[in-house]
Length: 96
Image (cartoon, rainbow, N blue to C red; front, side):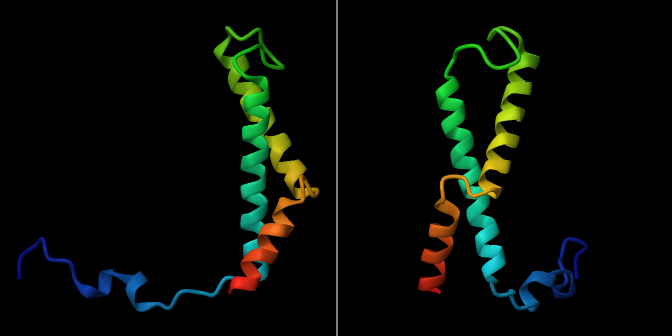
């Protein structure tokens, strides 16, 4: 046997069964998707103009603005956001 061979004991993912998605996991994934969508809406609304913390020419200000928008989008989605997370979760539960 060569040194490059991989033993079957080193492959744990193939032997263990996958855990079923719980409604909580599905809703959490839907919330994360909604947060990404809200973040994209905020980013496109800002466009190439100046951000909250800079005049558009400061890279660190742009990074701070991006981070602030991501955090705002995440909190907004956790508090109900646009209502998409619950609709997505319900749609996925019906198909399961």
